[in-house]
Length: 324
Image 1 (cartoon, rainbow, N blue to C red):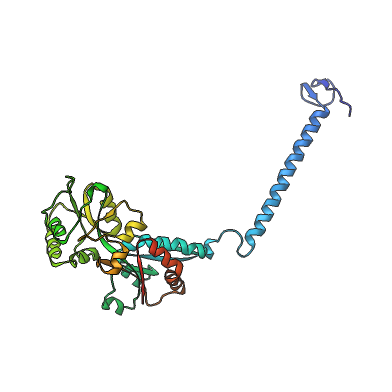
Image 2: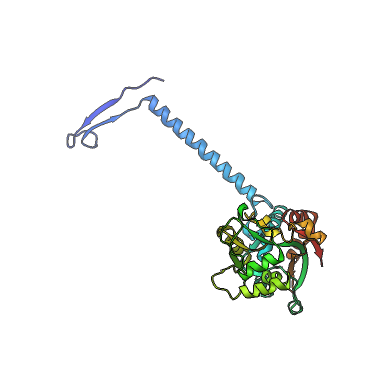
């Protein structure tokens, strides 16, 4: 194709020339300019066409049953909460359950405790509750149904390898009476208490009459650390240098806490010692539902009972019991 030269034309208003603006204008008709413009239009057209087909394919994909991500309208939710010592293991179970059932969301509610969990289940705010003890006759009379699923050693714990101490019944009593106030390395011992009616306080007092009396005396002492729930309890044990208190092996393992369970009366508080009876101090964990338990809640409980559920519980510091 031959290149046509640029044409210049001058026009002036009022001269009788072809109507136009005063001044000089130039019309360039070079073929290279035309070709470049055509190519731009062609490329733009291809991009628009490609985008159109992408939109069409995605629209078809997401319109199909099961296509794409599960929408919010298609999901079901199970809400679980209660004793904090069981939450770590329950989160692991929830993650595994959601992988097998992508249309179900399992939400773990924190900072309720056993009492708060019971109240929430009875009011319909929770689907499944968690208890760190057996439910009372009065609680069961309200229509609650419980399932004991595991035990975990109830332990004395602290943070830091330099704070190890071989505890005895007499040593623990002296700590709570305030007669022992330092660790073997000289670090001040910071005693961490739980509320008087808390499950952990009740279990601590049940270890021996000597410890019961010492704990009762400690409840009237001023300046001691106090934790209102299991998560706060472990937070304080980890963060306060020299802190000493109680916890469960399950919570320490499942929540990956930097805490050391201390030996008691010469026995390491592990699962084997607990099951054999050499370490007889443990917390029983229970699932419970309200009078009108949903099929969804029952499906999750069945998963806890399954081989996979038992494996997860065992790996997180629990001994599976499965007592109905």
